[in-house]
Amino acid sequence: MSKRERDRGKLGERELAAVFRARRWPNARRGQQRSGLDQADVVDGPDGCHFEVKRVERLVWRTAMQQAIDDAAAATVAAGALARSAGGVPPSSVIPVVATRRNQDEWFALLRLDDLLDMLEVVEDARCWDARGREDSRGLLD
Image (tube, rainbow, N blue to C red; front, side):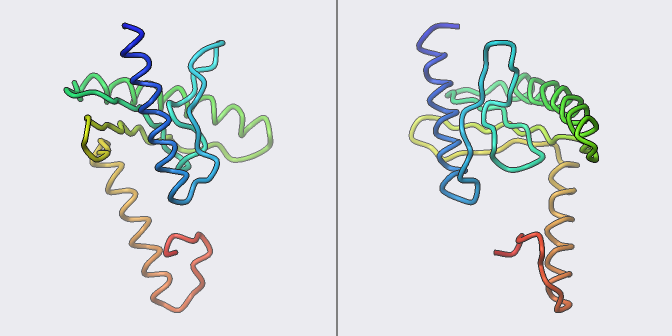
């Protein structure tokens, strides 16, 4: 990978972190990719998701998605070990997401349909919860 490609990837990671900060994740930032730390491309963003950022004109989506799936599986194992050592409950899984943007274009997200449907069920449950006059304690309806 050329320096230009690496720099473009870093720029994409910073851009996506800025998008997250502008929404509801003020601590989102580019993850560390060296020193033995295999973090997601963007960390401290939406909880429970592993973001693989691809800032390319032509996305090889199957390869990108497989990388996100593999990295999310490793993140699930690491998060489980950390939660258990702290006496907490480990996550069931980390959702792999590929975030991509071409030049002069908007951001797109690629994820498995089952993961999208699971997210939509949570949103729908929260809306039903709120419609029944109960407090929306998770803040999903802000």
